[in-house]
Image (cartoon, rainbow, N blue to C red; front, side):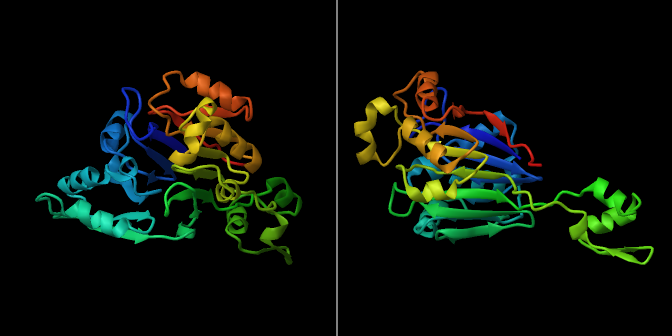
Length: 302
């Protein structure tokens, strides 16, 4: 599982930072969270093939988080993509996409786009993962997303050998959840599998003030990517802007017991990211200011 930061700026891009976009690569699938203007070009620089993206998740309907969709969809269609693209997001997304895809004279020839307006709860479920969302405090319909890998059980080879199971196909049957018989004795998967090991977990807030719903969503996450628009020195700007300071984000990470915090949506006013990082680390030592094209691997558990 790997995160690719494609855009880490606030609502205005800078020379070093593009607008919000985060890619998650997991077992051959690519999931895009937000798609600010210029995101497809960022993917080119990052060595990411945007044609592999089948699902996009939009946190809210401010232009710096979705305006890159139109160009990316046009490029996909121009390259004769035939698989549908599924776009998930808050109420108002369908009307927004209708306007976007009807601008100018562009018409799709090859592909289709599915638009799904979602509510807090389950968004999508795969064989080995689920994606859920929760309401945030930014706009009326803003959302945070959680990608969570399904729990797994570890095969206890030593235990299986002690029970007289020879290595080979019987090991495989037990790992698939099938009971076997050895010399008239039944052996079940429960006897040779560990207790469930929680899967890897990533939470991305989009833009938000500090809120309890995000703390709950992020509980015990491996990685929390949180709005860190402001230095705590500029706390007076937070209330009216609907964003967080880096120290506030660090408090969320601490309360949620996450392993690592990555701060994003950095305001253009800050030219020394290490200063912001030091602020956050006063509260939560495993705090990092995300940079465009940064890649972060989330290692397997167990």
